Image (cartoon, rainbow, N blue to C red; front, side, top):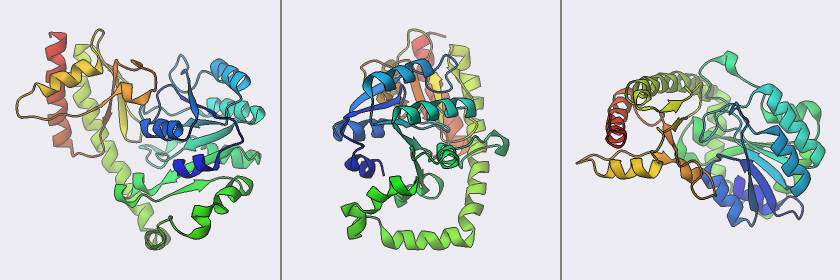
Length: 304
């Protein structure tokens, strides 16, 4: 979906804004599409973009769009609160900047009272033709499906509908979409996602407990997840994600993998003190075992 959107272009401005820590494949897509990618620093609270900086960058660069994962973000796990979303929306709307909101984790909340209105809902309420909201069955049904959706106003969707790819019928996975329509219409998808939330909450709890046991005593910091896939961990002072990767490689007969923080920025060395962990692929016992091994590797660097 990101590739499709970027082939359409948004005016003639080859610049875009992204969150300071952003989904690494999106960064690659934007670069390959010819955009100059400009990071937006996070707020002091770490709950979203710094509004002073966002307003400045919008005014100075007049970017084509601002890309964000606003709910249970990849990689940080952070959810942008409602008030800040409204400020971001108004800043982009008034500046003529589109928002590409990668809202693929919105349905994976652990508690229903934690939900925040999506950018798609904010845009629909204001009828301002500002937001492309992306959703994905990859995240809530099966990774191999590679089927998703774009929610936007009729005016924003028209160039996509009229594009050669959509018009020709040559690349939208029609057969699979037909099967998935039946799954959605039957209510089976809704039932499955309900079960998935409970499962992911249990696995996230196992990871949080392991972090508290093996990582916090070594000086690590993290925010417990309230949904989504990820935990964003700050390593102890003086330890980099590269250091930890090398320590893991030295472990005999064991492979422990994580995503280094440096993958989530185009600037060299940024987020070198961070690692992204995912709790959705493994059962509780495997999470506990993996976190224990990773903690041992970290302990060898910290000396505790």
